[in-house]
Image (tube, rainbow, N blue to C red):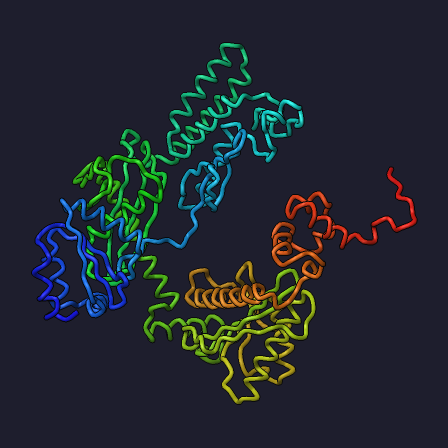
Length: 613
């Protein structure tokens, strides 16, 4: 749309609050925005000089404009928010997070279990969270296990099964971690009361749980059951100790959400904290790529609303540095000038600043946006650290992988002047090795790679990294020696666990500092070859290029074989388990086929008597 075309349209756009939508020639929605004055806001895209490249690109693609008038700017925000979530236009900021958050699930079943999961299944179970770190979840589950007796078994505790006396209490009962609902020693009402305590702990309401435990403790003391009263006292002390570790502000503050925003040339950084009874129970910092000329208050409004929804916050107050819109009209927006709330806001800003600096540091060290001089400095550091005779401008890294001996493949990535040279990446199918033999596989692919380069008179790398440590390095060196390339390039092995660097012939590895720039580049190269190799490996497996032993069984397909390998890890394990265990995973009929296939020699032969002792 040209300025002249827009001038003809402009008179139809009112001076009222609302949302505007930009479409391209194919009627694809490009961007959704809100405005206090629609005509002024939309006109600004066409009538002023735009410095931002992405905004210029957006304007060049606009073919048609649609708008919706609302009663207020707040209503415009609500409409904009819903449209962005529904359509996800390409030029609007993207608030999606690629992480799968951990949850604590209260399973929908008789006497529900409580455990960690990353999968949300719509089966009626209750999910508490999400949490921003799995360590936090495990810590909470430990607190629950120590203080709230719940079952951990997977028994089907229906009233009928319990009445028939099908189950017996286990060690957890005798340890005091379970009250024995499997034998009818705990009522469902009492169990549900304990589940309510779990919910309180997860939401930071530890005070309510402590009150209930104190009542229970006093009851035991009144009945002269002093040992049980002492156990309750220890649980109360454990919860108080946990609470004292988690409270970092005034415990008398009401529940609230705290959010702040920083920005640089390319990104916004939004820090979010959820406050519950004086404890910060969730923290999260988002890095949001700038798309067009968004205002900080608009980005913070959208991010805050998204985060409140993600973390299921029902706090009636948000603490922010600038005025924002929120979808719930009953939520109070506070911009503090001093006091505890200002300290909370300062803490959020501090976390956002640290996150921003960390991202910049990663960009520099990982060379994603490094200048040529920075790159050469890192390579010079690598030359010095590894005592190389040449500057490693050309680096290649090898890795191989297989799945229980099947689908053996390998990968090689190439870095030139410190950055990936993807046109030089290579995949390898292992051709001469059968079964699991990582050393022989490494020897094969190194030989094939450098035999090809030598025959084509292509330049050799200054540095070759063998992922896998000393054994893999030795296998690679055998191929280098066969090709007569000893001394033509430096070769090192990278141990998978300790990230130690091995040199041919040395008994002790080199251990570079964890934050050494050369070490960081080596790790990045190693991670890249893993990514590249795993992607190829999955493609090969999905195409069924190589069959495993299970798929050779008549009546057993790829899905059944995959299910068995996921559960039992290897064909060797599957051969040793019982038919009953197989039935649990793939059903009775297929279990019978698999078990009979592997135990054909164990079956009674025709004309013989089977003896049952």
